[in-house]
Length: 397
Image 1 (spheres, one colour):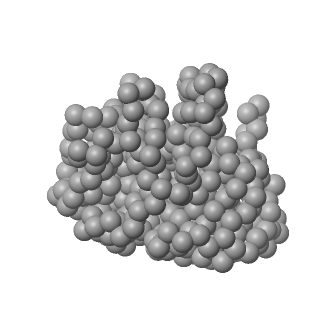
Image 2 (spheres, helix red, strand yellow):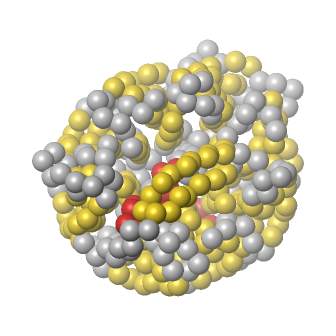
């Protein structure tokens, strides 16, 4: 994570990223010494890739009396750069550019890192499903705005104790759900590296540049978006299959089935359902989708409707009109679907939750200035970031 170009040449990057129906336009002027830092932040801009869930019923669905319960909310002085939540424990990470906080599901601050360290950038953050392990990367601030040096990787336990640190890792792209593997690489690198939870390099391989990494829920496989082409690897280093699309991968247990899409800006995206061995099962049109953890269900988002499909029978189980959905995912027990209709910074976004078992829609949440959402895989908790500095934690059931 250490080598950085020293060229003072200035370059203007106009980032146009389209993921699951969400278009982000970002004009950024950077010099080459800041280019690595920008690439490490890419995954934060793809902020809704594995995050939330959506749904509806043919013929409509009734409105539930239940609604998500607000557990706590906090407003911070500094701009919040990232929020994360552990899938099983519901513990929360909130970080700025200078410090990182670890919170309980009730909002209690368990520990904080960064005070007095003169950090100027924090990224590469990950938390294991059980909340036991946290990884992060931090760099010291310099007098020259947004330039970084002395980049360190830290691996911590849930008490905040640093188990190990390193100055040699490149930019972290992904952290496995079980906390056992760390993957580094970026769109600017030609090499991807896989480390264990002791910071030891296990294997590496040449790539065309890593745009994103998505682990399967078991942590045994991961899908790499290599410059728009999908490649499935095992954590042991085996290259399983290559796919003709790499955007917004949705992966079930053991990567038995993978839903992935290509982006065609002049028309709807093509969405592909694959088996783990790379065999194409189905091609669909839509702007996004998701697949259940057991692979039995998947959702296609198309225009202003959602379709829940039973994979084995290839039959539509439910369909409902929901406007402007950006992202979706299904809870691991196939009980809930969450969906987000994300608007501009000064508009209200809507979070929809559907109860599949009871065929009911839980009262939608309207949130002004929504920037990020994180949902636990069981659909029990979700956390939102609003207007750069307000964090709110909800309980669904």
